[in-house]
Length: 411
Ligand code: HEM
Image 1: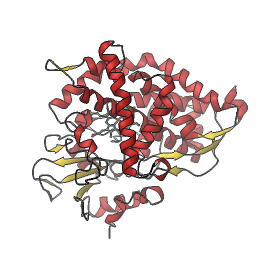
Image 2 (image 1 turned 30 degrees about the vertical axis):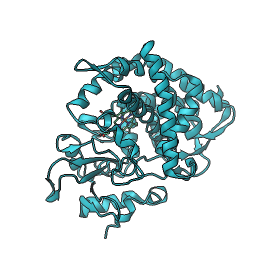
Image 3 (image 1 turned 120 degrees about the vertical axis):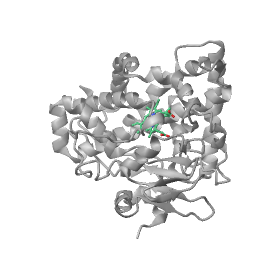
Image 4 (image 1 turned 135 degrees about the vertical axis):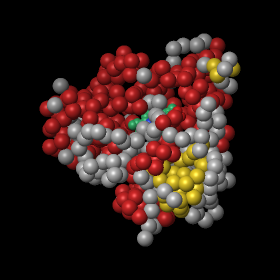
């Protein structure tokens, strides 16, 4: 019997085993209804084909009612803030407006546009490693994995270096607000405080870029037009909020989770160290394996059937990415971490209309960082437990103590 409570019980994602629950759901009830007391219930989609079907049909499955259980939860009177972003923030907007908004940024994230950034991303990566190299130990998350995505998205947005730590802290408070480590008073207050700070910060930056445009993403949003109309300050603001969070809070978990898996499997690590041509496939396997965004939600715009279940107009439909990425129907031996896996049609970046705009950037950051870590810290080893984030939205890792030979890292 499937325990409904588990998928909304955030503690279950810290110390439970959601994979065994998802496996059971895929086998017995792949389109599963969860009733919630005092809140609207939701459908859980756990099979890869069904998740793809929902992702690629934004006409039926809307993003304008929120994309996450919890923080965008319209049925929760404590969570009204983000509703203002519906139809304004790219990720909370449906076609055709969504596509037009996305066009403003798309060309900044193509592999060709990003390629010239690689030497600089490698230089930042080496500065990050330099800072801990002599110590022989550090926290893989805070000292290494989180630093690179924060630095890169801050630079792209035009946030100066002295504010990178602030952005890291505010990101944690926003998406990690349900975790006691980041909480100030309550989850709701933590989230509200961080959101207000991020909004105030970017309001100032937007004002500066309106009068003095640069080449950064804030300037691109400020100058972009949809059918002759500029975005309003509020629309620019919500998209800055999306980019600063999207850019930081995901890649670091893929990086940490990937390195953790490589440490646990020395043979796979050896293989990758001696044959770097495997890196592209290894990265896709790390993305499948870690699935950094645990769920994405849609709201049905009309009555529709999925596998004989009747979804009603207005129902929430939750796509569990890690489950789709372990679907036996698509992946041979899905619980095996295989850095040579091919094909690897994971949906860690979503699928269709809202497919992650930062996917190429995340892949580039992962390739450079993993490459340098394997080179400079070839004997990296865990020195303590993996501490997971209390969340069913992000497969977050808060801390992972590691050791390594200082001399090699500093060389
Ligand atoms: C491993 C790292 C990442 C993962 C797993 C990830 C995952 C995702 C997923 C699943 C979606 C689809 C959302 C939906 O369908 O509603 C998405 C969209 C998005 N991601 Fe990422 N992401 C990552 C890195 C990044 C980075 C580095 C950025 C920074 C630019 C970014 C910015 C965005 C934005 C702006 C969207 C919205 C796109 C749209 O609405 O069209 N992501 N991401």
